[in-house]
Amino acid sequence: MEQTTRRKISYSGIQPSGVIHLANYIGALRNWVALQEEYDCFYCIVDMHAITVRQDPRDLRENTIAAYAMGVACGIDPVKSIFYIQSHAPAHGELAWVLNCYTPFGELGRMTQFKEKSETHADNINAGLFTYPVLQAADILLYDSDVVPVGEDQKQHLELSRNIAVRFNGIYGDVFRVPEPFISKSGARIMSLADPAKKMSKSDPNPRSYISMLDPRDTVIKKFKSAVTDSESEVCFREGKDGINNLMIIYGVVAGKTNNEIEREFAGRGYGDFKMAVGESVADFLSPIQEKYHGLMADRAYIEGCWKSGGERARAISNRTMATVLEKVGMVRR
Picture (cartoon, rainbow, N blue to C red):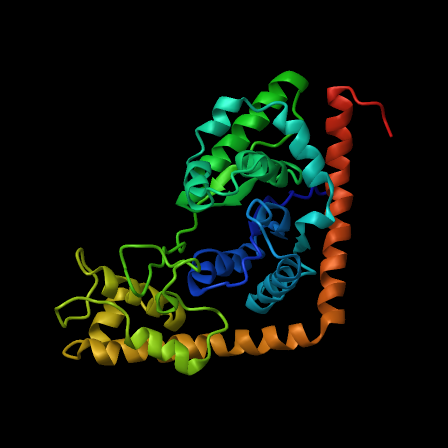
């Protein structure tokens, strides 16, 4: 009898922020879609993480649904992968409490994101903001995750998750799989169109700095035409040309071209031609995603069926992990 090889498990989550932009897609979502071919994937809309910052309840509900629909529109397959809403699997919060009791206060105090968010939201420095990384550890450890796709800003949180898993396993045996970071070769960092020294961000007060996945065609082209570049005129990828480098990365992704191909295409042509080409290519690229998104949002029964099915599958797996954890720490069996 042949022994089947277990596919590795990948876990990722995205906040229901209200604006999913091009950098989210290039840096994360497109890689998530590709991972489905090699891994058993868990994808989660992390609505519990979102409330560390005060939310309008109606907006949070709508943004959660919109983020789920955008994930499917971008290519997450809710049948092939387990794609669900975090609060629909209560074991996330339950495990987070247990892991809080195995996480030293000092470790959480060293988390740089807590310090940054405390400055940004000085009027609401709550306990959830402080213990956010422990909930993130619970998200990951509940599903025996082998790998977690991470960017630079999440490496510290994943290292904490690994530390928590190792510490818990050292006391109770091999309960949790210790996850490894997954750094995609194509995980390009997309910068602001208005200030290429900063990351593209939805929180930027300048709406011309980012491309929303739902921006109309004319808006996309206009934003690229106004993108900050430099005083030269040569389209080439090199140090000191942050604006052009950023546009070349974006164009390379949506048009499927290398830097050398882009440089040859625009040799002897000015930045105006290049920025127009990038804008038109991005608009063309976004069009089918937008069409699918609007179709999904118009068919709430279908999309609701997807997240309910994903929640059922996530609960079945996470509840098994939680039962093991509770037994290990000495809780009376339910």
